[in-house]
Amino acid sequence: MKVIGLTGGIGSGKSTIAQFLAELGAVIINADEVGHEVSQSGTDVWREVVAAFGSQVITHDKVIDREKLATIIFNDAEARVKLNRIMHPPIYRMVRAQIDRYRRQGIKVVVLEAPLLLEVGWTSLVDEVWVTTTDETKVLERLRKRSGLSESAARARIRSQLPSKERIKHTDVAIDNDGNLAELKIKVEELWENLQV
Ligand code: ATP
Image (tube, rainbow, N blue to C red; front, side):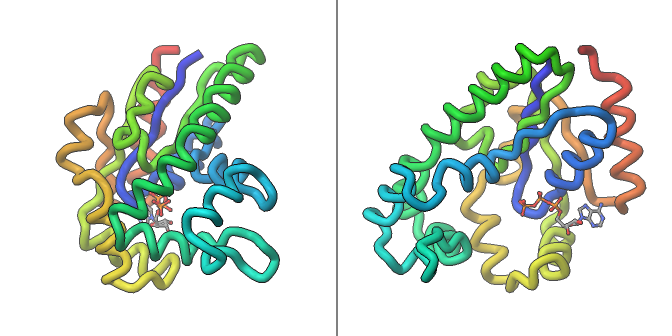
């Protein structure tokens, strides 16, 4: 089995590429979704988040308000470290367990989509690192269209992550996503065909 770690900056096209890879036959693990799973209401992680950030980060239904938490951590490096210390170990453990399960099931290609794969040093979980890069102006435009995220909020999130230039130094495959979706799809299909499983 081959495990590909797919990473890249916010709005750089990770989910779009993961979707194309899923259509080609890969099984996707999305680290953000695992994060939601491990922090559901009533879990130890949920309790730790509430203890660290207060009831301001939970909704009336006692669910973690992700947008609120995101606004806090993307504007405060210390808060970000605090949240990562709570969230990353359980996410790591669940991702590793999922990879092991897929290996036992005989799955050929697993893609771990993880925005912070390099920042948190999870490369030991994967066989190859693929990084998507997109020009910042294009990212800002796509994010505005996708979620209506303001330019300043988007810039704060971009600044909180590793710069593209740094990411590319640690990658096996760099995918330039400055073109349109059809161009991106062709690139992904080529990479899939050349994948040595
Ligand atoms: P996040 O870090 O927020 O999870 P992401 O890296 O997963 O983002 P996507 O969600 O795949 O990025 O892409 C961001 C937005 O840009 C989406 O609305 C997507 O449809 C759009 N997009 C991605 N690639 C292209 C492209 N080549 N041309 C036009 N739009 C694109």
